[in-house]
Length: 384
Image (cartoon, rainbow, N blue to C red; front, side, top):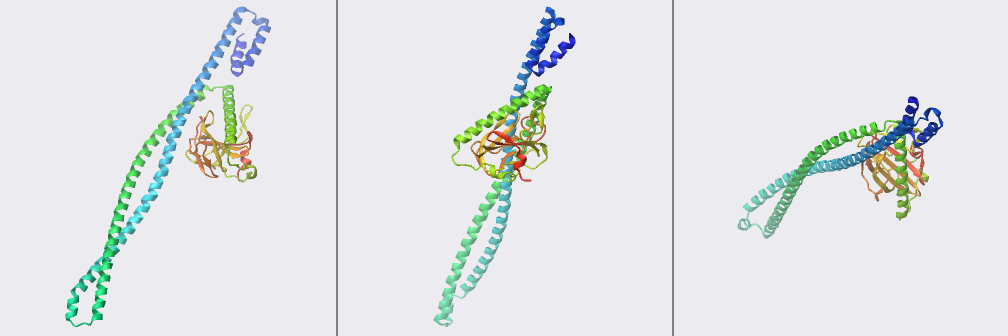
């Protein structure tokens, strides 16, 4: 009797069918005909069913927490990415401003020297006034030349003064711009430091949730059931996205038919799982998993339009791109998404950052290609 109940304990976790089969065996066996024993077995069945339901609720709650945490991580990671981009732009601008300032200072020095020469010439010319020249008996043509020279000298001095004033004003403006950008850069670096600390804290909390999730999915059957449900969720979202893309399409897209073996890799790295290999039980991978460090850019393989950009249980932050004629590419496990639904993307354009969302053990990219809703080996479409 103990061995039968022990067998029941394991069978109940596998499926409801096993429970029914066991009951048939129970009623068919004279050894289990005793009413007291039957009552005890029914109580055990009820207890196991309640435990399964309780575990299911726990898993659902943990997955909900995981989503909240990973979406929070995505927002922080995106803010860091944007801040780092702005920091790079500021660094380039500051470097350019410093070069401009140096050029303006050199220009200012040259203008100051020219003005000194003009002032000296004007001073010397002033010592030979027209009255002195007239008294000296010089002819009128000589006087005219000196008059023209004096006028041109005065004009040159005035022009030099204007240029020097303009250079000085521009120099002051550039100095102000430089000071403002340096101030912005300092504030940005302080913000980045704070955001990175926040990201570390969020990732630490996420890891606890992932560990908790794994502790709940203790048996192969539980894990397999979770994977199956996750796959069905993905298929459902794919169909919705495909239908929405068809309904909203205004400009025809040529699809991937002519691109086999020509498409760029979404990310380069070690292939952890290949298309068609065993995932768990009878489940096989419908795409490929490529390892890469967190925060690395994920690139679109071909021009298209984003039709899905959200967190999906088991796949984390997923982005789907419609390429036309029923062809779509999917990018999962991301740390954050850089595009939203409706955005148009080009081949090799950054669309996401590598992560481990969806409860993955390491940072990687889940990459899948589907044609008219059916998965195809993505490796065959990428360049060798």
